Length: 179
Image 1 (cartoon, rainbow, N blue to C red):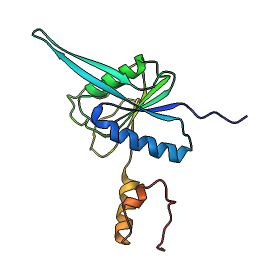
Image 2: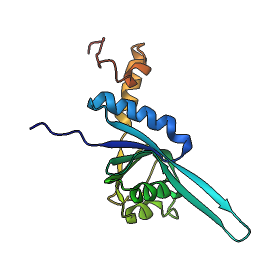
Image 3: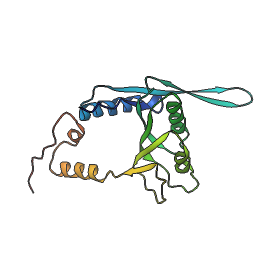
C-alpha cells in the first residue's frame, strides 16, 4: 500500500518571513511532488501599558495535526522563534521543526541554544554554518554546511555559468564542462 505524504505546513516565524516561507514551500512541493504543503505565519502583537509590555503570538493558517517547519532568517536571542515554536505547538501541530539561515550563538553569554533544547514542542532546529560558532550546541540544534553550495557557485562562476540556475528546482542539474 502506498505511503501517504506527510501533512506539512511551512510557518513564517513572523510577518517579515512570509516571502521566505512561500519560497521554501514552493521548492519543497517541487522536490517532494506533494501538493498538500501549506503556509502559515505567526503574528506577534505587543500590548504596552504603564506597568508592563506583553507579547502575544497568534498562528494564522492551518497547523493542527500537521508537521510544521518554522522558517526564520537569523536567530540571536531566540525570543521570536521561541514564541513561534510555542504558539505552533499550542495550536496543535503534530511535530514542530525550525530552520534558520544564521544561528548567531558564538557569544558564550547567549543562552539561546540551551533555551531551545528545553522547549518541549521542538523536535529539532536546523541552522547553516554561515556564522562561526566555537561552542558545542545541544542535540536539538543541528548544523548544515554551506560549503557544497558555495563550491558549486565558485565552479559555475569559473566556467561562466549561471549561479542563479543552481537554485532553480525546475531545471535538472547538468554539467556542461569536463574534468
